[in-house]
Image (cartoon, rainbow over all chains, first blue to last red; front, side):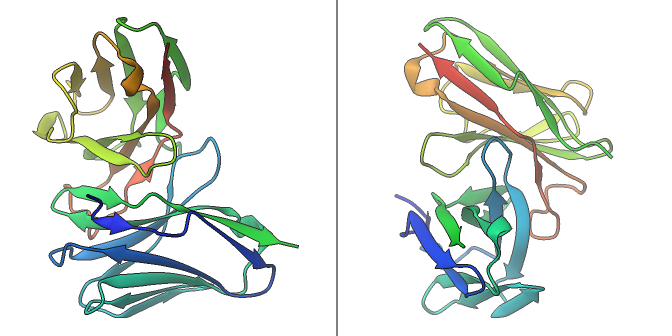
Length: 110
Length: 117
């Protein structure tokens, strides 16, 4: 059973528009959530994180929202750029581990 | 400075062979993690080192998997008697502080793609 779920395998967004990637989790004990970005043949790269005591964290074009009551978080990218095309992994930290979702492949269309 | 490096980048093994995968973490990074990423899945935790001490190996799928970091820097993941289900990308990550994932970023290497025939 997956503790971190990304139910959309892929998403296509027009360049310049907002990309919204969603993630659900089941373990209410997670204390930190992260988003990683991955290009082909490279390892995941840390993008942005949020503590469970916050509901929003913003870094440039990237904003992560956390809804603890719904056990849901989302990553907003605005405006979307061609270089944003990649696989995005939602992850949650538990003790010394990071637990990843399956990823969502984002395609930015010209 | 240099990031996390892994070698080989690609490895093809016949079923039953032993393989050794190497990870060179970022210099000075205390914590080192190994993950397994199967096709279409996210990375899954295998094991974790703090310096040379292996503090958590709960993710290792069987006793055929063994990891070591004898001098607290380079780490090797060894898989004995490889099986087809071991085919995956093996990712190594390192972080600066002591396993505090919520305060510290894990930096990933490019991975080793293992194919077992």
